Amino acid sequence: MRAGAGLTRRLLLALSARPAVGEALERMPVTRPLVRRFVAGAEPEAALAVAEAAERRGLRTAVTYLGENVRTRAAAEAAADVYLEVLDEAKRRGLRCAPSVKLTQLGLDVDPALCLAQTRRIADRAGEHGITVWIDMEGSAYTEAALDAHAALRREGRGVACVIQAYLRRSEADFRALLAAGATVRLCKGAYREPADVAFTTRDAIDASYARLMDAALDAEARRAGAFTGFATHDARLIERVMSSARARAVPADAFELQMLYGVRAELHPWIRSRDLALRLLVPFGLDWYGYFMRRLAERPANLLFLLRSRGR
Ligand code: FDA
Figure 1 (cartoon, rainbow, N blue to C red):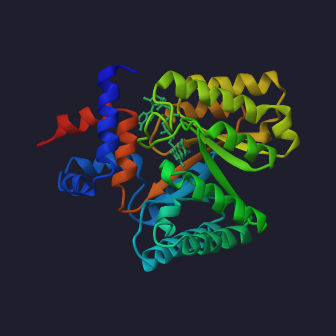
Figure 2: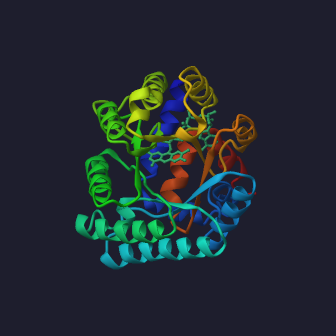
């Protein structure tokens, strides 16, 4: 990574935790089209429309209701209610979109028991429709709690999947334990600002970690245990590597999937689908877009130039 780009990325990630900046951005008319590139719209309907079009094209889908770090019981319950509505409406339309939830939106900072209860409500409704709930991974302060919640719900027999961030130094041990237990796991690079003692911070080290974990997911041992991995990345080199590693190990195509975010590198979709590989599109919606949007900017600081150049137009 170039030094300047690294600095911009760190700055954007620092700003992603400052909601006041979000309020200022919201007042800039130019923000809206750029946000819309990454966020389907304010209402569930917008996400369902995108999911419907994607499923018609043969993609799998997931939806995320934007929001994090709620401070009240009522807000946590309301967020879970939105997911229940989305699940019911998706079923009515014959869609299979899976909730991808953030535990801090479901009350983790308020009371872990409240958060578990809300996640359980969503998993139960999703389970009625035969759908797995993905538990997103947030900053490293929440890693342990997310893994615990995932393990608890899994022990109860609920259909939940969790996320491992390749940039965390602890992830190799966590990921191997999940694979050995036959879990369903999303492998991503990691999107938060983490200190060097907790996470790899250079692009090369993060990519190397991702490749190592990818190989573990495709190894015979993980497959014997019944593990399933969603490789979440827009990095064409890593996607190519998933394809070649799976081929070299004769891994059947139904043992894994690729996952990508709405609005990012959609030009790669036909390439992945042409290899008969499953691809899941994660579609965010909701008004609380700020943290999510800033993390997307940090991944490609060139998007920021677009925002700045358009200012005042
Ligand atoms: P990388 O950042 O190296 O990008 C690869 C290529 O894609 C580059 O060419 C880059 O320019 C382009 N690209 C990437 N992001 C872009 C953007 N925003 N705009 C335009 N181009 C872009 N993280 C997390 O911490 N917890 C989680 O639960 C999840 N969940 C999740 C689900 C899914 C389906 C995906 C795809 C990603 C996540 N992430 C996540 C985010 C993930 O950790 C990571 O931050 C991003 O995917 C960016 O990393 P890439 O692997 O895409 O590579």
